[in-house]
Length: 333
Image (cartoon, rainbow, N blue to C red; front, side, top):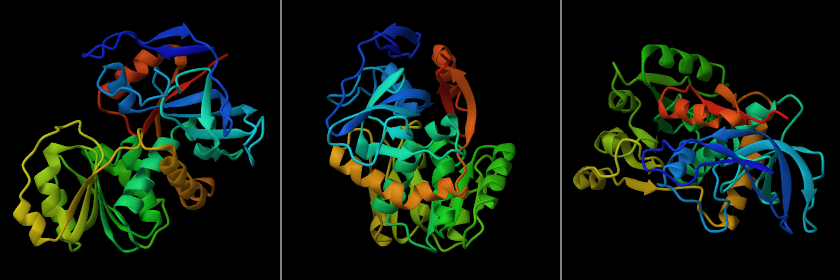
């Protein structure tokens, strides 16, 4: 099969991604092989190419954390999935390829109405949003939920999920135009409360949260730059969940403020979690979140598509920091 990879990794992420031949993946007893039609591009893929986020043991050495396509083989222990079925899948790596081996527990069934491109934009985002808002953050109906990076691939899905589950959402965007697009996106999601969209270039997300009594859950994709103000945003007993570090790994934290609010800070990643944890997350996504995609409540947001052979341009687009939603690679031929 053909794969898209960069070798060797380069700290400046300027080694061009290239097409290479690789052996077809092996079939797991409890897994399937998917013929990939589309693959989502995530910031983690750029970090891997830069040598800053190596794949976990046993994962393929080339990037790609989520794909959509058709099952072409099933292992002997697999039940409920069939050859020819359209699926989306969460991977530990290896999605930039013609074929991908996937544990059956990490599959999502793709309905006819959903394109491969749209489906490929969802597994990583939904799994990240669900596991951090619900499992870690303990999000409940009527909670105030602050979502940073609301126009990103994860943030746009997380904000929609929170609105759909009855939270009072404060979603952050960068710039008036992006804030208005996010406002329109969230206004289409049926929920108990109208979302508040904050343009961080001219408005204060702390004040927006405090106006609602403080944030019960903060989902932060930024890192150290937001640390202190995120704590200011929290309600008593609030939970700050940090899932990204593009704006810094180290920052000052006012422990007094944290203690006074009886608040907590959590840091999580998804990619390197044990298979059992990923299976549990994806089971919850299939049961609770995926139906919201199927019925149109949650809209996958795709900024742009690129042919697999133009993966470098796709990475350059993500690196520029301007996508609204997800960039997706599409395999032709």
